[in-house]
Length: 324
Length: 83
Ligand SMILES: CC(C)(COP(=O)(O)OP(=O)(O)OC[C@H]1O[C@@H](n2cnc3c(N)ncnc32)[C@H](O)[C@@H]1OP(=O)(O)O)[C@@H](O)C(=O)NCCC(=O)NCCS
Image (cartoon, rainbow over all chains, first blue to last red; front, top):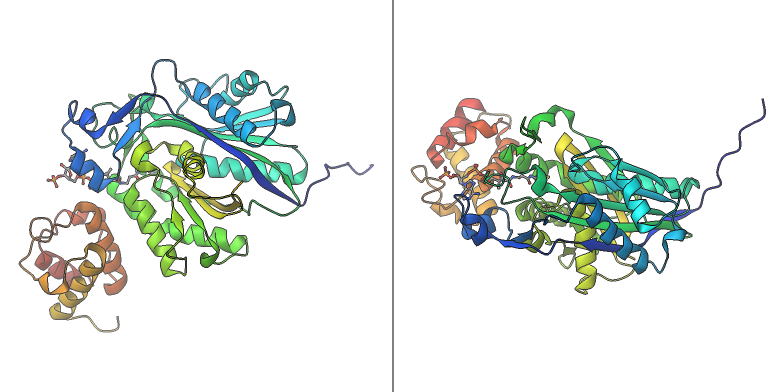
């Protein structure tokens, strides 16, 4: 038998551009306290959120993904014709078919794109980034659009104060392409299947979570995964310029940063706090935080960022990237 | 820990942990104090205190147990019984 030919790979990959999208409708803690027994002070102290955005009638996982994805392509200085793959990480589309990726590819105008959805809940973007990077590196894709887009307001009971105060809607996107110098490190990913019931959905299709158990897991088990991602990339904690954990709860973000600083991360390491004004947007939170920090001038091209997503499954994924 | 700690040792250890997690002066952490009402420690800080106490005293403090540990003394008794 003749040996099969395989694709020719490239030495490395990097993020070429990022973008994000949020619905217009801003919802404050005081707005929420009118419909449930909660208050601004409690929410700020317990989760760190001041306001978040909820999708309107027209906003969908697909529409927000299209907006974020288009911005990322423009930021990369590319056009849709330069891409051939679309991955939409999400866990909130109501209809599994047609998948979001095919619709997004069509609406953006990426012809005959390889397209699929990927569900790893709040870790979805970092999973998808790992997959996209390997597709490009192996030569299977020339450039890939990776999006995290979520309309959590569709799967949250709007009167349940244990979830409605936390979750929100948004999309974030990145274009991944070839690079001589590696700009995306190997992914450290996994699942903690013994904790599978900690976050899930009720029969009414509403999200539920064991808040304290998830908090315990996230504040103890995620920093070591972040260390693993650093190690895979051959870096030390002191090399991190920017830490972008999934924006689950500001206190979880701060606990992860504190642990990494104990391991040698710098005091001047910039730590994402986008949850304060965006809420917890599941797979959208990491790329959106990166985009917002870039727009605010808090991170710069060439900065070394450590990304780490975690959520239902319980699933986690993290990697080091060089900021575009 | 090789030998079972005394209640005084447990209290001193808990006080250090509470100081580190919640910024409450260790001297303030006495047996009769309520975590929530006197020391102003919320349920998420309690989780962090439990995690550190588990490491330090080699005990398991499940989340379900946390709600029963109302005072510092309750926590000392729990650790002493289960360590
Ligand atoms: C969800 C979460 C904020 C709840 O906080 P908690 O401290 O565990 O909340 P509890 O249900 O134990 O309630 C603690 C107290 O606050 C009160 N409370 C709960 N929710 C409240 C709300 N929304 N507003 C005001 N008060 C509230 C409770 O009545 C209780 O008061 P009591 O002790 O006087 O009875 C917290 O557990 C959390 O953020 N966990 C991590 C979850 C996460 O990040 N998930 C996403 C993963 S992708």
